[in-house]
Length: 173
Image 1 (cartoon, rainbow, N blue to C red):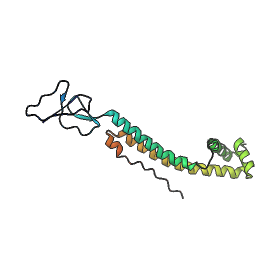
Image 2 (image 1 turned 180 degrees about the vertical axis):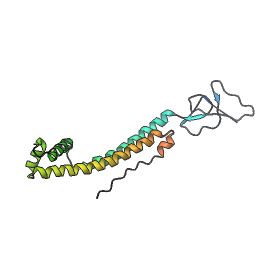
Image 3 (image 1 turned 90 degrees about the vertical axis):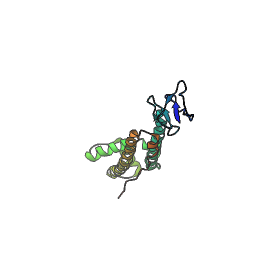
């Protein structure tokens, strides 16, 4: 039995005659095609089709990103988007105020007045929430980056599929 294929194709022609002949435009292969994701190389070996690997990697990266986004989006779910957009400003103003109480933070001053609490109380609350979210984000993003590093090293679609996308939450105490 001889196996033939066309270079860069997943066509597999099996000739079981006693005196097989390589068809025109085909090359003799070293063995059977492992699966439908492999194509013929010039040296007669099968290699994984790069486009299949690229599609598998793109799908796995989307899965990784969705898992992480789901956790981080859930952490701010109870806040309106307009308020979330002010988080970095609130943090910067709280840091500046706590470093120098003579600083007048424009956003935090109004927020504290509207809530009926002191600027000191609000700055402490903002920093406490910032520290918790930073711990969560660092834990989740670090795991996402580690999964992406593993994904970049994958050489086959099977390697990609073997990656278990599990993101653990930090212990909050």
